[in-house]
Length: 304
Image (tube, rainbow, N blue to C red; front, side, top):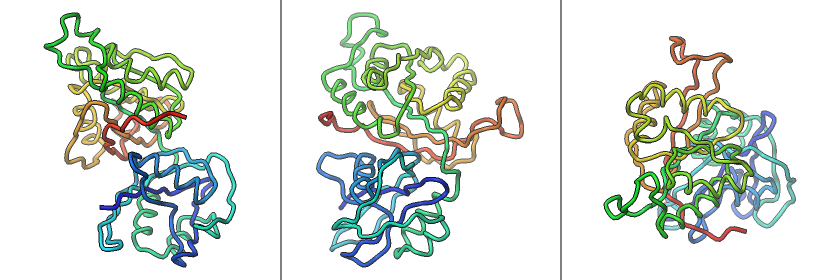
């Protein structure tokens, strides 16, 4: 299996389509994963290499699979906002065009790219993003003699946290929230340090705080989603599956399974509500979940 990743790069109502002289085709920017690389990291790298633009990731659009060179190839596509840069023709791409989505759909060569563009056009480009993280490995509860709230990350958990510290900035987070457990806070502390913010404690999103009043916990998550910028939220395995499945059900979004391994991330994308929303509003004006994509725990990679 060949794994690759790419993006629909957008700005000001237009998307980027590239011409590849090697294949004489028009395509969305994409390329194969390097050894040990995550799909989100590969998508950002390939966009930069092929277009010259720095990308900030948004929602996951879809995974495309097709035969290539006698093997199966899968490509994970993300929405990505262009954050500066400029195009220079290179060996891989000799022309880039910024065009409306409809024009891009007519221009691209492959039907698979048209399907990705249709997925991109099915929702606003500038959705609200939440990176919902399960805390990294912290050893077994039975092996920790002290207060469980104070159970620290294991050596494997610290490697997972470092991997998250490399991957989560691809969405340019600006806020970091966490259930008040040492293992939760330490999972995302490095991200907060890099952003230059503190970790905001969220008792409603701990296992002990969530289950006595699920509605209050869900409302708190929606309030975080409706804030300014992209938040990282670290919680626990007893909370995350219920949060994701409940919000998906309320929004009419089909989600078959909700895996939740330690150090993993749910990439949640919400349609922004009208100001002054309330979950009691029967018109559904509160943040509506548009996309939910599971990202396994990243490998810890060296930080630049």
